[in-house]
Image 1: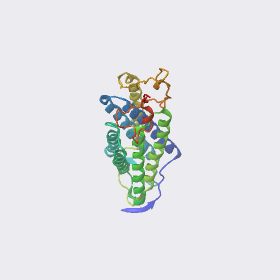
Image 2: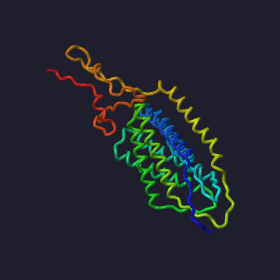
Image 3: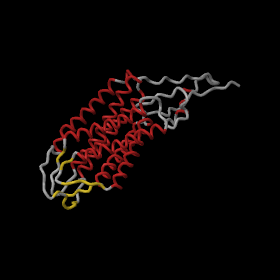
Image 4: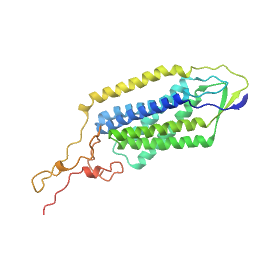
Length: 303
């Protein structure tokens, strides 16, 4: 039987900081991987996108979610977690991000419609991951939701996913990747806490036996996953550069003094850690490559 509604604590200062830190780390690593994917040949692009999916979906979203969940406290009830449902929420997060990344990052440069569609699919799936994870919580209480806040959390998830996917197909400079990861971290943690604020908990009048494991039991495997993921990406970055396809240098056109124009043009992509390939045709006006027209070799019209 349902009892009295109780107020819950959804965060502590420590879990809030840890949740954002893991979200930032995962998004940062994921954006680095997707930037390298755009530079790579099609044969190796898929591997980079898979790494990006595990980084953003696994660490940036799911690990953030679970670190934040550790801070949830329900007065009068212990909280335990169903292992199978919790593991399913992890797989859902990785698959959701992976599908979005492959939609926008595997083929040709995507247009706005494809990015928005992928963002909607990924965002709703990420929101589903959140509520799947919450469904894996076991406590001496029943849980209901404020519908308005649930809808708001889904909207935040869709917007965050769309912006994140746009970042993955546009950013290459180290400083902008760092800024974008910070923005993504705020959006992801904001979605989580908006969803958690929608929870309404009613304690049971008759306590029941709780099955599952405690949140702290998940911490060691989570830390191992994050550490291994970082090591794998670092190793891949060290061994892959020689196998990547690099864009050819633009041909020079002799000017009046016999020197090439291209050699005197300023490099607008300096300090780019993983520059994208220059489009081969029809991409100079792309929404996602505003600098493309500056990279076209100048033409010299004879008098």
